[in-house]
Image (cartoon, rainbow, N blue to C red; front, side):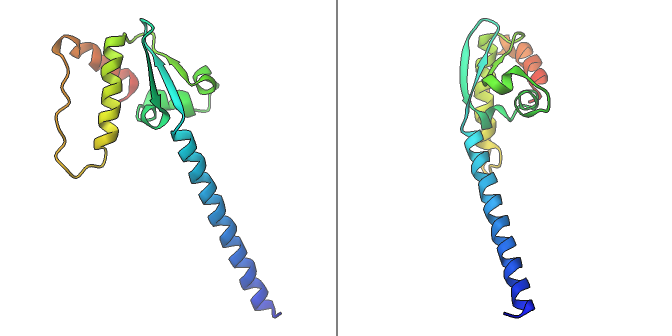
Length: 130
């Protein structure tokens, strides 16, 4: 076989290996996104969500994927000591809403919240970087 053909075959093999590596990375990411994360409020209300929803929050994303050794990264349980269950319920609903309408071309419906928890919800959203 000529040197040119050998080089061409070598490059084709390298491309195939690169494609396989990319596919493996995508599968790993899909698997990670399907993991379940539990959010626990200060009054011990628990909400189980897929990891891809939780990663919409900048704060929670840092806890789960950051370079630090957050306990949450290993356990998949995040204690939110400054957010009560009633407020966390709306945070969870908002994460689902955000995911659903993230790249929507349709008109996005309004996300209604009770006025009596509006300030608390605003503080939670600020803390969670939503």
